[in-house]
Image (cartoon, rainbow, N blue to C red):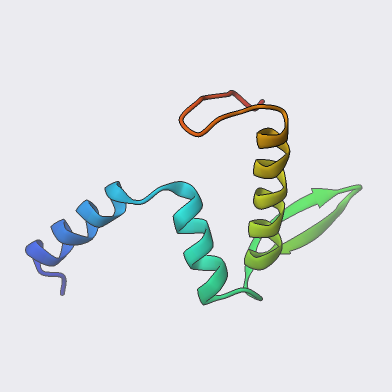
Amino acid sequence: MHRPSSTLASAHQLRRSTAPALLLARALARPEAVAFRAKDRGLYREKTWAQYAADVARAAKGLSALGLKPGERIAIM
């Protein structure tokens, strides 16, 4: 059974976390666990948390190389 104060503390902590920080925490905790499966040419391919975090880091580095600065926003579609 969850205690209301514990749940509120967890919600507050989650609100203060960033998506990249949450991704990194999961990748460090369970690097070989499957993060998601995506269909590619009719087959489902698995991506681990470590692979996913590495992909995100490469994308962030590329955006930075293009001149995107911390705090700026973009849309990816």
